[in-house]
Image (cartoon, rainbow, N blue to C red; front, side, top):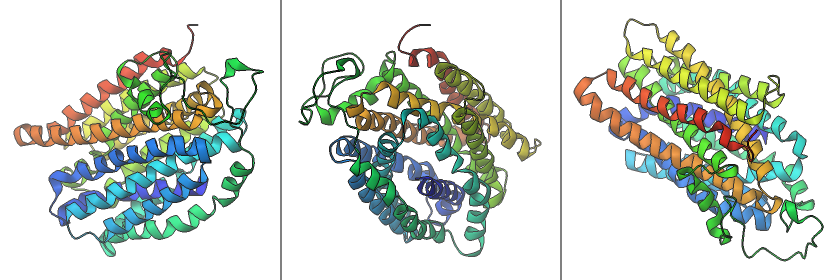
Length: 417
């Protein structure tokens, strides 16, 4: 699992580093954010499919199908001759990523004891450390000396052995499936072994049809009901805030500050290192805080980092200053993400863990897709009028989303303290 996470981290950081160059060479600079948004959007298809699929058949089928589509998408993107073909490849890649992303969550729930979930999720974040250190720099060298296509093609080749390392864990999940047929408050009720015909709505409403359960939970972002709906809401907000900012930062550094792709990629490195370091702290509960307090602290750091990164629009301010602030945003995500993952598995009934994980990631992906599309459109609209300060305006708006996570942190608890 950690190997696959590391590969995913390398691919994400490398593609983000290369994308400004890709967009220029394929004459698609104004479609730059679309290449990110489409992958997030189509991942929703994979997530909605994977949730119920994993609950019924275990994580293996969704995992292998997702990996296959992920590789195909990378190959299509790596051989693209126009921006349309590249976007199509990213779309296929997104479906695959959605499938195996949910499968990973379910695998954690079925293989590891509950008390180890926080440690496992922090290990997933730690898997970003090495890719964060070498990924952007290596991607910059590949772009400069070999060509951007090998960023995609190389990731496709490396995905296969990383996926094969998952076989022991998938076998263990298949042989020991702790799937309950009752809710936690039905202790003592017999398990008939029959498949569920309806899944209770975690927001407290009437039972939803299984295929719609993940989508209904994802739509809880509109109301942020206490408990699992609020967890989904906060996940959407932090995803929108972070992704909406991060996809623009390499573009700002390459095309406005004239850094090399590798140099611009350093901002992704420091953000990922901050994320990994904070996840390590969270996984060991070194701050001895409750879940809601970790969310509140993480949201605060995320906000400060985004506001600070806006200084990159000032030509006389060294680029490293903005990069230093971005460490705070990464650290905030490192505190919030593992916390929300743990809360999702704790608040969902065992037989709903696939659907709940799917809902969490659906909200994540939809928010990221909307944010990257909206920030890109807003950036180019403002850029034609005010120029470089347009980046600061967009970063300020994403900072407002981060502030909202601080305000909603207490609602991730089921009861008032």
